[in-house]
Image (cartoon, rainbow, N blue to C red; front, top):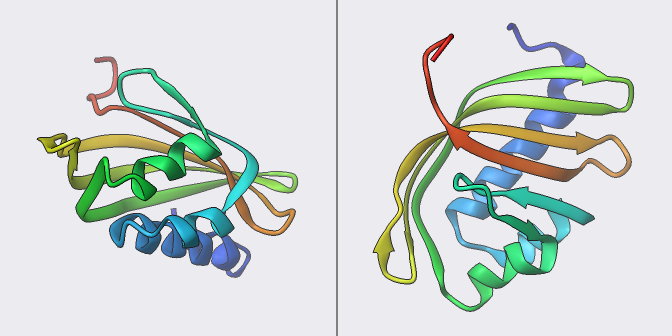
Length: 127
């Protein structure tokens, strides 16, 4: 879907989020995530904002590369839902957890902060 002028704030937010994840920067992420943020990992685990940030602060999670490809933004009033492909070269507690995942990112125009991230496997339609 082609980018519109209205999409610029969310695209900027997504770019800042990707940069913070790429740089393993818990302080920047702290500003970008809503206080009641919820993250759902690719195996179904659920993390609160403090838990999401702790992975970086404690050095358990390390991103060597992190991208959000082909973000498709859907507006629902003052909220957007973006679906894209997250490609990461990552380790967790020293174990390779690199993956290509389907990412759904929800944000609110209330301060332009991420409200939720949901990660899952990629599959062909109908698969």
